[in-house]
Structures are given as structure tokens and as C-alpha cells.
Image 1: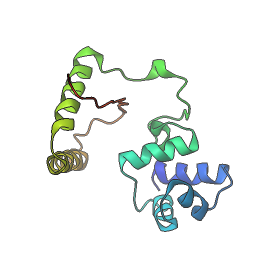
Image 2: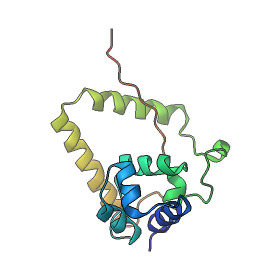
Image 3: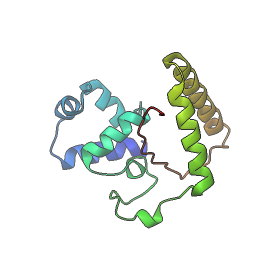
Length: 139
């Protein structure tokens, strides 16, 4: 069973919740929670963030990248440095200006590249990127 499957079940039980209660709280179905807990499926990144927030833990803990559920040890985080942040900001700005259809295409390309790298063992594990974004119009 995956770490996420184990941790979502552990956290749900710690809160004293049934699968239907948790599903209702976060706007999903009981079947979805069941699939997660059995390791059949995992949520997308947005939903993963929602689940981590719901339990008051960080995403790295939920997926097994960390054994510390808190965000207190920020000094242990991996920082991208100025160049990495500038690149992500630039890509984010460009992405925000694309049409919805083009954003879906970019998302699909990223998901496929991630799948290929994971299956071929080229995926660089151990990194979580936290992005705080605010979309605003340029003057």
C-alpha cells in the first residue's frame, strides 16, 4: 500500500471520521476516499493540497517525502534559488496568459512527461515546490 493510502486513512481515523464524513467535508464521494485508502488511486495536486490542509499537515508528509507532518521545519525545505524561482515565475506568467484550452494542453504534456520519467526511473524524487501565486493584470 502506498504511503498516501496509509496516511490518509491514519489521519481520517485520528480525526474520528468515517469515509462518508470526510468525503462530505471536502466535497468528494465515499468511493473516492475508499479508492485512495486502498491505494488504487491518488488525488491530483490541487486535491492533495486540500486533503493536507484538511488534516493540518503538509503534502510532503502525506506522500511519504517527510515523516514530519508540520511545516515548522522550514529550514529543511529545498530552496530553488533565484534562478529557479525566476524561471517558475516566468512560466507561471506565461501559463496564466494562455487560453483555457492551451493550459489544458500544457497540463497534459507535463503529466505525460512526469509519467514517462517516473516509469523510466529518471524522475528526480524528493522535492516539493510550494508556490504562492497571485494573478494580476499588468498596467
